[in-house]
Length: 139
Length: 117
Image (cartoon, rainbow over all chains, first blue to last red):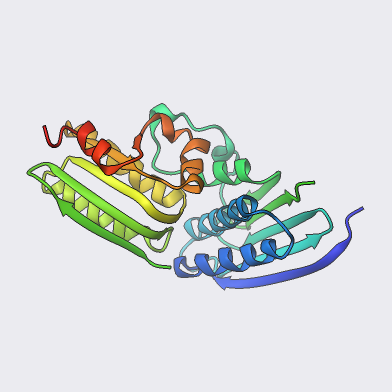
């Protein structure tokens, strides 16, 4: 079903100043796939959050780069953000936040889940993290 | 785009923080430092104007939440002004719309904090 329309890969240093580079590059890819403005904004924020997460969970001397791949298919964009950082327990981040408790952290994965159509997060301590995200083109 | 943060101190406790540009992991520390400095100097009624913010991520949300908690602990409040639709969406997804008072105009926000009578 999924017709391959090509792939864009990007490697960025796992540092805060490069998150903007990743989200701009991926939003440019999305723009070329006829996503509307709102969907491009969703993708941009989701990628920014995935990269931010990778940097925040990097151990000292750990993740040196983040690898982002954008697989363009006929009806969807598949994005993977991968790092080799310290990893974390994604189950702890994917549960719903209680706004009453007003946590200062933990909104990133919540946003990714809300903004993308499919999200899978694989992470384990010491082995890094893979965030797999899909955004489908509106018909 | 970088983040610009401008401060207007309107009274002993009152300040407006005008934020413009992109608020993310790289730029948000500038906002955090500014607001922490204001609060440490007793500015506990704070309006954060987001009208010119084009991008806002979870780290910026964290700074706003932390600032809100600090001013509330000191008996103050923090109000937000004018987020664009894409920014408002971030507050809606995280349900922080139920926490922050969000106004369309700075005048409304200032009035809610007891400024100008």
